[in-house]
Amino acid sequence: MEEQQTIMAEPREVVERSFNINKKLGPRLIEAAKQDAILRIGWTSAGEPVPKNGELGLCPDLPKGSKMRALGVLGSWVAAFGSGGNFTIQGDAGSFLGAGNRGNTIVCEKIAGNYAGYAMRSGKISIMDGVGDDAGSFMEGGTLLIRGPAGERIGGGMKGGIIVIHGDVGKSPGAGMTGGKIIINGRYPSRLPSGVTQRLLTETEVKSINAELDNAGMEIPKDAACLVPTQTLQVETPEAPVSTSDLSSIGLVAGDLHHSVNYTTCDTVVLVGETRDENASVALPLPLLPLISDGDVLTSDEIEPLAMEILSKQPFITRQNPRIVDFVLLDSSNLADAPELLMTGCGVIVDIDDLPAMNSEEIDGFIVATRTLLGMDKPVSFLNAISRVESLHVRSAHHDIDMAISRIEDGSGIAEAASLPMIGRSTKSHLSDTGTQTGMLLGLSASGQDIAILQASGIDVICCEVPMQDPHDLAHWLQSVSNELTAILRRLGLDSIELLERQHLRALDYETAAISGLRLVGYDRPLPHWFAR
Image 1 (tube, rainbow, N blue to C red):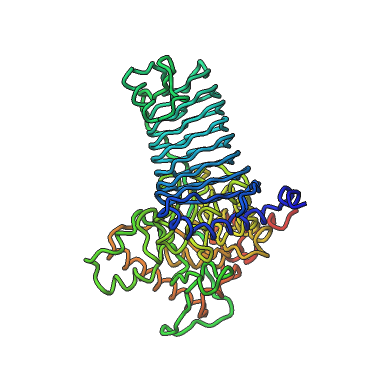
Image 2 (tube, rainbow, N blue to C red):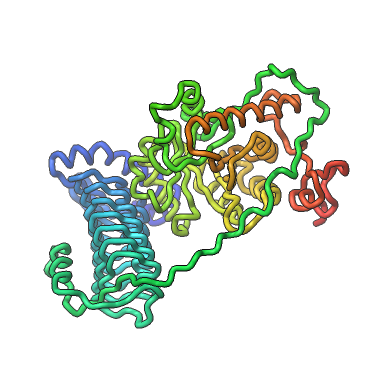
């Protein structure tokens, strides 16, 4: 009866079970590593087998010296971001096994799914009964050993490391690779992707690789094929289309309210993640999250006190060295650094456009792994293209994501004014009964006018590029944005940014009214085609 309930488990139940396993294992892993003990998943305390069925995101960032053994069929994102532990699966594993690995030794005794070893930097992953598509993609180092068939695009985009396959390989092996080696002891397509060539291994390479494998039964023969990148003609990549307009053709009108005196205090604070845990929500002094590449720029000892006071209160989005008030932008380039980044930052923004397309189960596995490292009370946001806004909102609502951010510059050329009704309709359809907030990532730096317009359009948080990297210039920019936004609110007679509504907006020209659905100034109502069914 208990086995039937496990098989019939709903996704939410699997996620909860997975979180509970990680929560219990966390403190025990470090202690067990000190004692050189093996922790087990899938057995009772008396040693009776109780195989797992679909648990996902287990054991992220296994500490050095830790030893884990699991029994059953595990889901996606197992043993990701490992720092030197050992993980053995007596059974199957789902997608993204050992993703972002930087030192783990992982053995899967049966089949693994897609993207095994994705973006790994070091360590060793052995899969004993075949693997799905895209294994070893974006590898930077380490060893991926596969016995049995491998799917398509193995080693796609790899930059370094070694992949060894004792079995047949699907089409397009090594597509887009710029470094590393793919060694195949089996059949592979005669037609290789552009930029990939086949050569024989030298005796020195054979000895070195077999020593690295350290497994007499898995040694590679001298006649194994070796796929390596080859030089190709480098041409300039055309730039993707950019948004065809900004928000300058949208105005803000006061309506019937009188203006406020110029010393009126205006509330511009916005909370992120309030619906999850009000006490752990992140307060933004402005509804603004600027994007900067490295958080160290904001902590220099040479920053003047007044500038530091402004910067210290303003959360930024950064890929490296976040402060405790910053959000981490997580993508394929820094995925392996997730444990340190998430431990420091106050939240995470996941660039869905930059990571491989994931199904619902894989997203659940990713969330379990990252939330285990981040903490359950900190906000998680998804960043996706504006042309996929409905998919972004549906996924965010389904997976209980705190904020769904639409990227304007996604190569589609969609105008910023046209994106407003796209986001508005999708929000009403998919997010109205959820705690998920909406965001927008602009391609340029935002002004106070931009923030006011987007807030009035129902966008909770505006993300943008910074106009400069110098910390003093950044502080001046933030202060000027704050002053401009406050002046707008006073002009409109509002004392809080939360009071901005769509009724305050007017399209200043016909084209903007046509694509945005806003009231045309003078005409003072939307154009007729917005009422047509």
